[in-house]
Image (cartoon, rainbow, N blue to C red; front, side, top):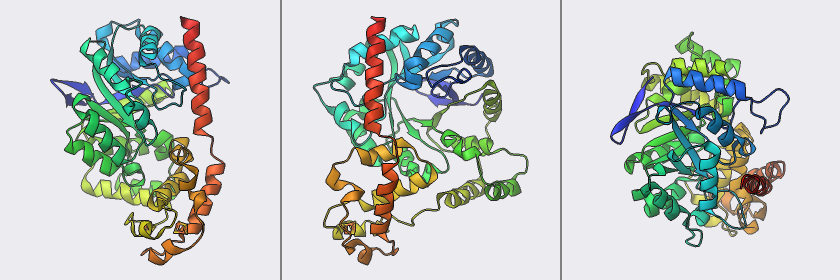
Length: 398
Ligand code: SF4
Ligand code: SF4
């Protein structure tokens, strides 16, 4: 297993993300197949994976419970367990101590090796920064008491949000997890986030290395491009080798769902094989094909002309992302905005179009985006449901 330096030691580069564990046949998201998961944990430990990444809401709250049950069969020092505080979920109030104690109990451990503030993004940063909830300071105290070995955060937010969070808490944070893969390098501005984290010397943890499987479901045309460069290499291997070449990337979390996926992914981390510059460029070429994007360059000229003060380049980047995959992690960033700042607030005055050097039909795209957003699941509703479910489960365990 490839390793990466981290603080005074090293970490195996591949970890198991526990949000897509195998389910029992016909079961719902909470019905984890424990037998198969136990087999995957056995394979992981034998193959050199030691890092298991769960979170409070994963699998309707059951990921922590199942992973705790399975990992408790092994010596505590043989595995590294990570979980996260759900400050990104909408709740009437936040109680870090209550949630943290519950998580330790569910996971059957006395400490977490790694602990993250879950998804610091445009909206949740207010909650994390709000002194009335005492969230970040509470976890800093847990770290001092040895109940957390390393404290970090994950983010689906813009680079500015990550920067603001690091400006406030950077000295206390050991790592940051971002969505990083060859498609999001440009699509989600991951390149800028990587450069920011490299600059601040914050080790990078990767989520969605295969973008939930999207990067292994390439069209024939896209596959042909890659086959020409190497006829034997599989799509997943391209993706993992891309990450091996990025300085600062320390842990890659893959949400595996079967022993077969585990066996395959383990192979790609046996020895270092980062992509050459030419190979990277080829992946970016495939990424461009996948995006079919509105060619906004984020120059920002249109911003000056908009009487409604709409964040047009941001909306167009969301539009492009939603063309690739309909993820509510993307749409929620608009859902949580004030109504008069959403794409639907566009009054079709056309002022932006006359300025845009790319001649993008901006009002038309904003109208399309508003329609797409109407079809997306509501993050607010999902978040409230998850919070309610977690509270009910927690009360039942008391
Ligand atoms: S058309 Fe819409 S987005 Fe463009 S300047 Fe007018 S209000 Fe702003
Ligand atoms: S002016 Fe055009 S290219 Fe520039 S940010 Fe606005 S929409 Fe994008």
